[in-house]
Image (cartoon, rainbow, N blue to C red; front, top):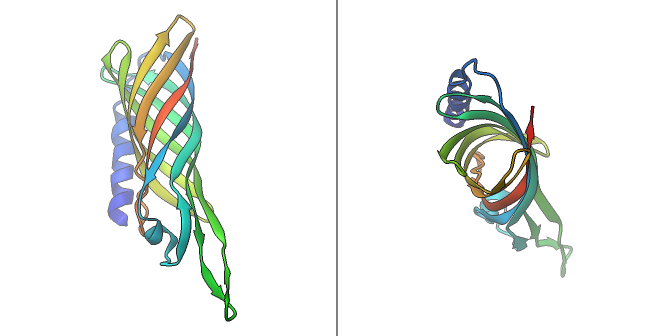
Amino acid sequence: MRLRYLAASLALTVAVGAVNAQAPKKLLEVTGLVGYTAGDVDKWSGSTKVNDWDQMAWGVSARLFFKKTSVATLGVEYGYQHQMWYELRIPYLTSSFLYPDYTVAAHHINLILRSTLSPKLFLDLGAGMHFFDGFVDPGLVLGLTGLLHDGPKYSFPIGIRIDPILDSDAMLTPITANLGLGIKLP
């Protein structure tokens, strides 16, 4: 568990240290995402009585890229991501069952480094924290973002990303496709 926090802290420290004092070129991106969450539902729930589940991932995020370095652009991301839901089958009395259901979702904050692979293709790497109901887990971001359109004021980012959530009981890995709007700020 300490190793995960150490790795996330190290990634954030390296990212912040890579920023130089160049004038910022700001970009605000707002994206929607949809995909699938890889992970063991039984392990995550802590129960072998999982009756039904759905591992569809969806969410929204806003990113502000604000510092450009010689190798990458630094940004911060805030978002909400629904990872999955599940239902348990719990015996009740002698011949009945209870079926409580649980939603697994979290707000997250990430520090993102965006590296340019070509004029309209970028590699996004990041680390941050996922704020679940009652606990916090560190996470990573690995994404590939392309631009459908890149105008003087607006862009339309499209991409795919993987967001491993490093939970001590069971790792969840949302794999999502993203589509959004980028607004170039002065």
